[in-house]
Amino acid sequence: MHLSLTAMAMVASAGFLLAGCAAQQVQRATTEDRAKYAKCLADNRATPEGQMLSARLWMGDGSDTAAKLTDPNPLTKAERDALVQVHNRTLQCRQIVISHDMQYAAWETPYWQELFQRSDAIFYKLASGEIAVGTANKLSIESTGKFQVDVTRGHADAVREEDVRQQQVAEALIQANARIAASQPRPQMTTTNCTWLGNTLNCTSMR
Image 1 (cartoon, rainbow, N blue to C red):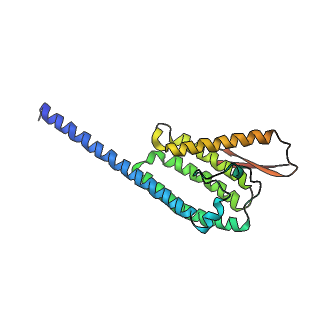
Image 2 (image 1 turned 30 degrees about the vertical axis):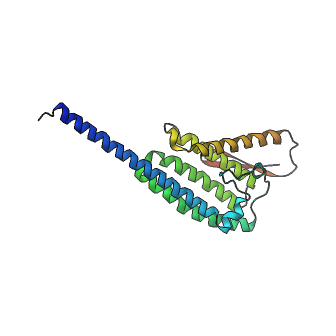
Image 3 (image 1 turned 120 degrees about the vertical axis):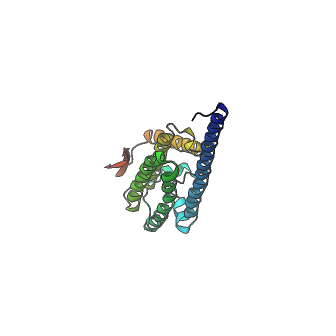
């Protein structure tokens, strides 16, 4: 059976409408899930434990200062205990992202998994008192930058412009601190330097 040109046009039109509706559904779900994830993280930060840590750890919400990148001390025992509680609640927030990607955006799942892997590596170093807070904050910024670069390849709108701007500011602070540190005498104390090898932390102690 042959369709008339009019019928074919109607079928094509219906197909475009269905595709458009599906795209709108995905966009709506993405917007809603982003909002849920952001709220989950914000609620976590608003807890007493989150408030305790926000004064020292990099939040990436525009409230951070350059001093967080030069903090030479590890977390205190109380702060490490608080970090464990905050991290456990963060794992629940991650489920929002994982569930969304499984249904709507499987292509970005590997990038989120890599980001979570790097975040966990920083968490374990901080929770054990192995690295200074300033080092952890620098690593966190670098990890976020890698995620943004990876996830926006071919999907330029995957990261909000506001998040990109905040990342640019953070990276500029890292570069400025590196220039200042290079111009000053090296302190006579043992320090731990960490760099990313893929998604794995490589930390060495130097005097």
